[in-house]
Amino acid sequence: MNIDKKEAILDLYAIKAIQFGRFKLKSGLISPFYIDLRLLCSYPHLLKLIADTFWGKLKLLNFDLIVGVPYTGIPIATAISLRCNRPMVFTRKHKKSYGRKKLIEGEFHLGQKVVVIDDVVSDGASKLETIESIEREKLTVSDVVVFLDRGQAGKEVIIKKGYNFHSIVSMENVLKILKDKKRITSAQVKSAKNFIRQSRKK
Image (tube, rainbow, N blue to C red; front, top):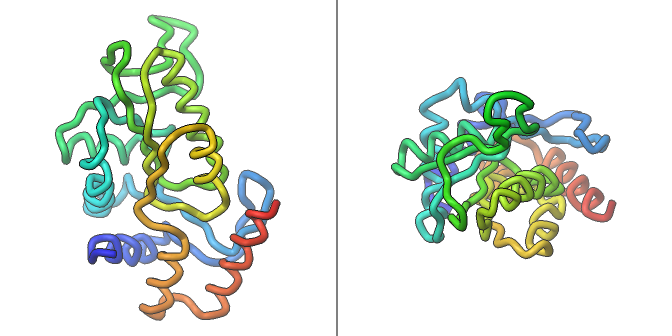
């Protein structure tokens, strides 16, 4: 892992975008860690760094457009678009009932290849919802790229649906870096790993 990714993880921990404690997730599960990359919009230097780590993966892929998953993926996709001069569009969670009643905002053409961007993956549901909206407009999706894979089977779900999956870092990477840098304890690492194992079974 290169220094940029380590730096990003340490910075994310410093701004409390990575926290350890007791957190209730959308799924109802109680997690000993929480990832909140919505904070990135308040830290432009860190948003730039995260965008640069994404480009390390994206430059190897074949795509015409970048799409950020609502909502956290949108500022990340925007930063990548600006840093790397690649066009993006974004999807709405709900189609407008007025105006042009669009579900996808931005300029696109039938058959263009789209890469889907997001902050983290848990069960993969939000990525698949976004992909469904994109494909409904006759665009093509081959690849999904996230910053962090929580290790809770979302990767496998996305691959099973026929899409390529890429992550910048895994939760295992995060735990190792934070433990090596003495930001978290062995007990916190053990608790996080146990949760990941148990949530995969569920």
